[in-house]
Image (cartoon, rainbow, N blue to C red):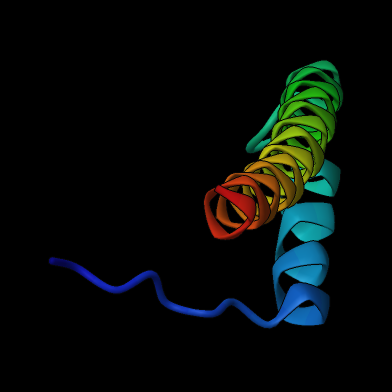
Length: 72
């Protein structure tokens, strides 16, 4: 499995800004990519929150099952 390398955000943003200023990357393209990344981050956050809720529900259901079994 490959590891993702951490990128220094400040260096990345400076390089990106430099490339936009020198017309190596169109500003519209950068805006489009950043908007897409933000939308994906929001979707991941929502999915993570839903998964956490599922874990909590499963744990609670398991505790109820154990309680019912111990009462029988």
